[in-house]
Image (cartoon, rainbow, N blue to C red; front, side, top):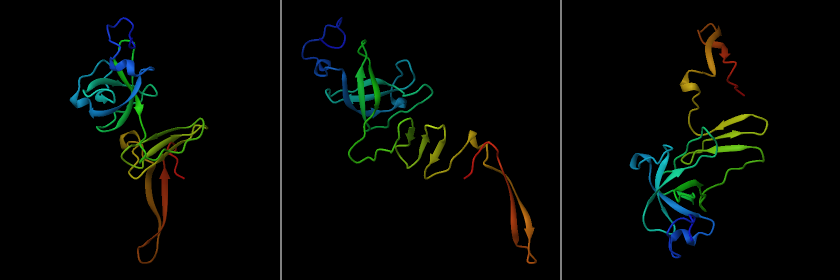
Length: 171
């Protein structure tokens, strides 16, 4: 019997090989290449126990999150009672570095850069990376004004008055 007791699966059906209904898979196509199965986030994967691709929805860890693994990413899939597969998450490979995380923290990393967001247990949000940080589409600037506060006899600036946004912290 497979995951769905009402199904006419045989004992050799691939779902029977996964006693808990979870296995690895490789992403082969992204949403522009597939049809949504209801949640707007579905991809094509080839499960480790099959040679043919299947379409799977992508689960998110929190409401409001979205992540679609790119082709050739290793993922973990499970099968619902309806036998519709769902991607539970991506798998680290031996070549990847696992981010440091403490209990109560949440770290969201970018798979193609050094960028990450860390939500600490005390509510602090840390943003690190190798690219620009854009807040509210660039409408919320950390620095709102810069004025020369003094000049020397040669016209060189000797001081600056910097006005920063009260809602964006600069260390």
